[in-house]
Image (tube, rainbow, N blue to C red):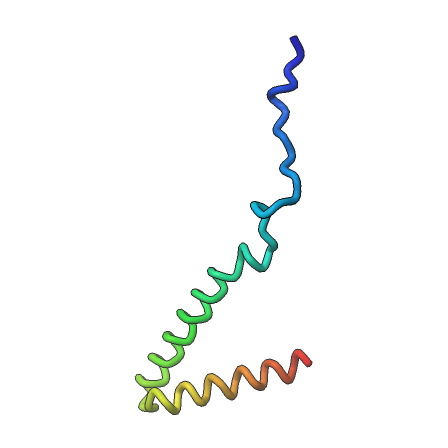
Length: 69
């Protein structure tokens, strides 16, 4: 008897197949949030207020976006 049942079936494209973005989005957002918390904490240890730290982080992100564009 052939051993065809040992060959895994290839799933058809349907709602159970996710895109790379869908697969990575949750982790990406979690890492982004963790990084921001660490940056704010470091800035506060250096004497900045949380608001100043968040403003500085926003400025850095804007600079990064300008470099990418």
